[in-house]
Length: 317
Image (cartoon, rainbow, N blue to C red; front, top):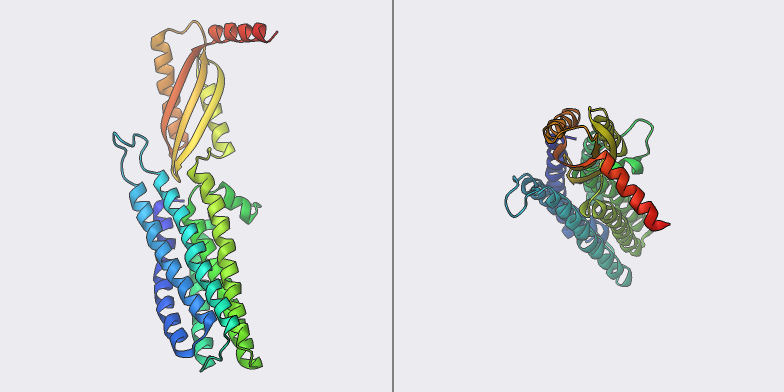
C-alpha cells in the first residue's frame, strides 16, 4: 500500500474522531452517562493515536545518514507500538476505572435522548471511517485469505491499526448504546457502568492484538515468502551463479526491504566477471521489486564451498 493511501485512511479517522470526541464530551457532561464519557475518552485517545502515526510516517521518511545508515523506516513501527500502549493505558484503563466507579456509585443520567442522538451520529461517522480503512486494507489482502492472516502478513501498520481502532470504536458505540438504553428503560443506572467496563475490555483486547502485531514488525520481519522466492529465482537465473546459499531479508519499513544474498559462483569466473554478475543481479532484483532498497551480495567460489563442506563433514565424523 502506498504512502498516500495510508495518509488518506489516517486523515479520515483523525477528522472524524476529533469531531466525535467534542460531541461525546458535551453529551457526557450534560447527561452524566459513564458509558458516554468512556466513549469520549476513547475518541480522544484515537485522535492522539492518529497524530502519532502521522508523526511516525514523517519521521520514517527521513533519508539515511551517518548515524542511521539504513534509514529511519523502523520508527514508524515504534510509534505504532506506542499507539497500542496508549490504547491500553489511556482508553481501556480510564474506561474500566470509570465503569467500576459507576457500578459502585450508580446514579441516573438525564436526557437520555441526547445520548441516543450522539451515539447514533457517531456510529454513522465511525462506520464511514471504518469503510475507508477496510477498503484500503482489502487492496492488500490476498483473494481467499482470512482477515487475520492479512494482518499478520501486512508490513504497513498504519492501515491495520486504524482499521482495528475503528472496529473497536464501532463495537464500543454499540455497547454504549445498549448500556444507555437498558439503563434508561429498566431504571438500572448500574448498567451504564457495566457498558463502560465492556468498552474498556474491547479497547484492552484491541491494544493487546496491536502490540503483538507491531512488536513482530519492530524486531524485524522478513519479506513475504513469495518475494523471497522471487529474489532467489532472480539470483539463480544469472550466468555464473552455481548456487544460491541464503536469501536473508528484513523489512525496515512498509516499502523498504533489506536483502542479503550468499551466492556461490563458478570457479572459472574472474573477479571482474563476478563484479559484473553482481551488478546485473542487483539490477534485476530491483526491477522486479521496487521495495528492495539495499542489496548486499556475499560472493563465494563454488569449488571453495565444496571443500569447506567436505571439511565440515570430516569434522563431524
